[in-house]
Amino acid sequence: MIGEVILKNKLFSGESINIEYKVEMPKKSEKYMKTVVAFANGRGGRIVFGVDDKTLNIVGMNPDTIFQTMDAITNAISDSCEPKIYPDVTLQSIDDKTIIVVEIFAYMKIIEKWGTGIPRILRECKEYGLKKPELIDFDGDFRVNMYRREEKSKTTQTTTQTTTQTTTQTTTQTTTQTTTQITTQTTIKLTKNDHEILQVIQNNPALSQKEIAMELGWTVDRVKYYLNKMKKQEAIRRIGSSHKGYWELLIKL
Image 1 (cartoon, one colour):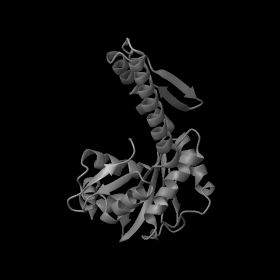
Image 2 (cartoon, rainbow, N blue to C red):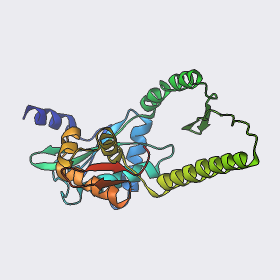
Image 3 (tube, rainbow, N blue to C red):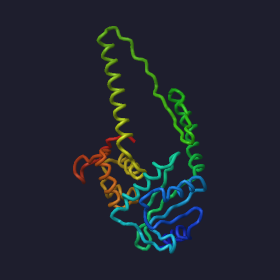
Image 4 (cartoon, rainbow, N blue to C red):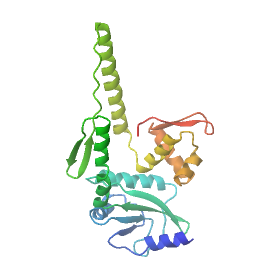
């Protein structure tokens, strides 16, 4: 009860430079995308869906489609903005109604967090004897190219051995790796919530839907929605029964 009061005070103080309300998700994402960009370029902020912006009455979101709506909001923001903005989209229950809270972080705060990892990448690549990573800036986007250790193949005395080694290495490394990367990156689009579930499954494949929900602090229905979605995307599959089986990841995290 106390937590709900604190949450109300935090989310329902009225629209300001860092909070905005929407009764429902607009059919056209452009209607809230300007707000997203403004928050990202400023000090960050929140967009609350399911609340009347004039009266601050809590209307709530449709429970039957709420997870699809969360995915739609996440994808719309990440696909429409350049450089990309990655929102934190969560559900909150107030007065027996569920609303969607979209938190947008300021670019400067995110970049500061990214920056702390660069020295560690350089240091660990050096420790493992890898080629120095290539750091590339794309007008606000940032990419790190990392290279594998180059292993010299052993000199062989017979033509048969040389041919076999070359064919095996080329076919396995080029065909298998390229196919996996292209399939994963091109055909399967995962949200932040998908990644959270996949991480839990990777750590403990034997968990049931109920145990995954407890691990994440989600409802079982929410977990079921994302698991079914990822099974259709062929990102995961269930081996065995619901009680004695386990989850298998079909993609690399």
